[in-house]
Length: 86
Image 1: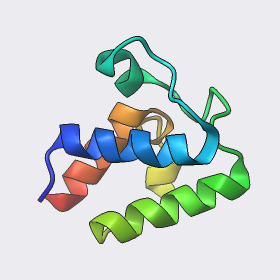
Image 2: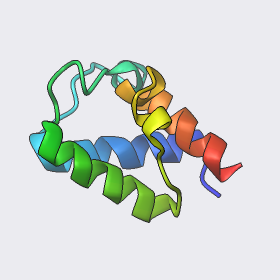
Image 3: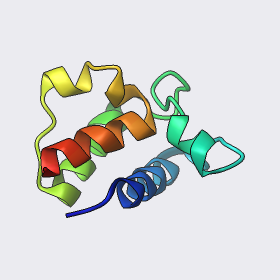
């Protein structure tokens, strides 16, 4: 099982592979980064990002998950993942 901070680090690394550095002066700002609103991933990259997250953690993100506000920012997505890991 992964703790939330390690999930956040995984998500930041995965996003940075797609489009470069995640904005933020520190870890707190990066965790609050709204990567969808910021245009960090386009729709094609988003599908790959979701598959990467699901494969890494052995989870399935539902349509409800991906349409939630939590999914739109790094810390929120980390919380969704942690919740699925129980």
